[in-house]
Amino acid sequence: MNPMTAKFRLERDSVSRRTLAIVISTVLAVVAGATPAAAHSAKEKTITLPAGFQPEGIAIGAKPYAYFGSRVDGDIYRADLRTGKGSVFSEGPGAGNPSLGLKIDRNRLFVAGGSAGSARVIDLRSGQVLKSYTLKTPGSTAWFINDVVLTRDAAWFTDSANPVLWKLPLDLKSAPVAVPLTGDIQYAEGNNANGISRTPDGRALIVVQSNLGKLFRVGYDGRSTEIKLNGTETVVNGDGLWLRGHQLYVVQNRLNVIAKVSLDKHATKGKVVSRTGSDSFDVPTTIAEYGKKFYLPNARFTTTPTPTTTYNAVAVPIP
Image (cartoon, rainbow, N blue to C red; front, top):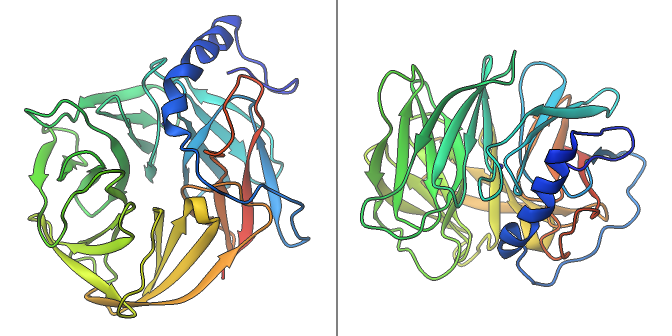
């Protein structure tokens, strides 16, 4: 989506693997202005992640455990939300195989594989990989499988480099299918389709285009329609999405804020009603909910990654 702190040690081979992979993952650490993390308020708490981990995705299921993916080598780290303690739960494929967007379906974890152009499904009981998939658009020389959302019958993955969504049936009995994006969305230079969610009525998907700050309603056939926000409003640097009723929360990573967007039930129009920041944010990327709090990993894209760089996740009250 490790070298560990004194509490959370891994085997020596994992340390060397992550050290070598730092060079590969540095391309994701975009040097852009962001406010450094500062002291958090009494209503917030942090979860310490392993040094050098470079988190990106987060997923939380019915139990009080958060799963984080590493951009370095795809390791999955599981943390107990009650104690903050954790360890690597599922070892990743290695250097150049990140774990980015994550989603939980019962006892399975769906993982977006970023620049590796892949997806994995992990058993949450054992940490073993159930299935691995290649999601590389034919004829393309680059791909970036960025995030994933689950619908009633499929997992849907975004590709920030190619105008397609990948549909993977939840029964895992069929191969994933590329669904071309058509309509209003137009890919441009930079990071395009990123976070993905369902619409409030469940009849379509919502995708955020990070570089242009636009939201789109996307039918299951791939046809997209822009969701106009307050006329000319945008959610530039939009990353992870979280739907709560008719409220869509958009993490604007390098702006260190969560934008709250009020939608109609079909997600044909929306309005940015608030933006909430925190001194504890240091380029948060994705978002998950548990116990009336949002949890966000700090990716720290503006900090040069090393094997000893510190990382954490922040829990904040739901705005």
